[in-house]
Image (tube, rainbow, N blue to C red; front, top):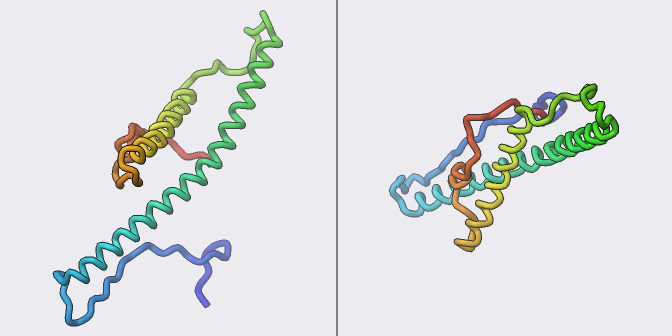
Length: 148
């Protein structure tokens, strides 16, 4: 039937919109404009759903990463406690480096995202409009490599 991409999955195609207008209508026709606006709204909702699914997958990977780091920190704490006064012989690196700052930024971004959504729903009683999430305090320009 269709061509298969790598791994047997169908190839991904870039999204596009085709708007078919009957010969007797123009772009100024209210029915055509309404349909086009409806179609744009549907596409925007699809993009939002795709982003949410991607975020959910990242959160699952993130949860596993956070749990592993938490176990490591707990093991280091137990090890350091067992060393007692001989803690200077500890082979583990000093905690709190740049990774801690990144973790705190991620936590703040997630907290702002969740609180902003909750606040918006309380104020309006509906879902928040597009564009609000970018204003919630998560810096776009400071993106590091994604480790999944």
